[in-house]
Every structure is written in C-alpha cells, then in structure tokens.
Image (cartoon, rainbow, N blue to C red):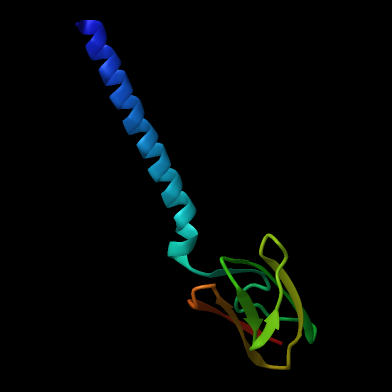
Length: 115
C-alpha cells in the first residue's frame, strides 16, 4: 500500500513540476510581448557636451519593428544594435529616438546634448 501511494505522489509531483516549468518558460518568452519596445543609448551620455559637430549615436533597441532618429528611419543589426552618425548644430540640441513594435506600441527616448 505504501509503495502505491509513493508512486502516486511521485507522478502527481512530476506533473505539477512539469506544469510549473512550462508556465515559467511561457512567462519568460511572453515578457517581450508584455514589455513592448525599449531603447537603450550607450553613447553619447545624456547631457554630454560634444566637442565636434559630428557625433555617433550608439545603442540597442529591443522588441522593435521600426526605429527612427529625429523622424528618419535607422536600422539595427540582428541583435538590435544601432549606430548612426549625426551632425549636431552649435548650442543645445534635443535628439529623439522612437521605436515601434509590431503591435503599434511606441516608445521615445530623448537625448539632450550641447555642442
């Protein structure tokens, strides 16, 4: 009788563990759908003073179908990395990066620079 109960508990426990693993994996994969598009700029830093009139905007975009820099489409590699040269006029400049995902959700990142 004890052996039968142990086997039953083992089967039910294994099924519950498998269901938890599948649920956890589904949530992990769905996080991109839940979070929407994201932009991370690695260079230049926000508020940075630019020495020359030309600078390079470098970063990574996650979960995007399209990406634009000041309204102009830019492209990413397969990992989402982007690198775009930009002329910065003298004085205070605001640069807008905008990302849209395949569901139409949009996020914007504002970068303020001084030249």
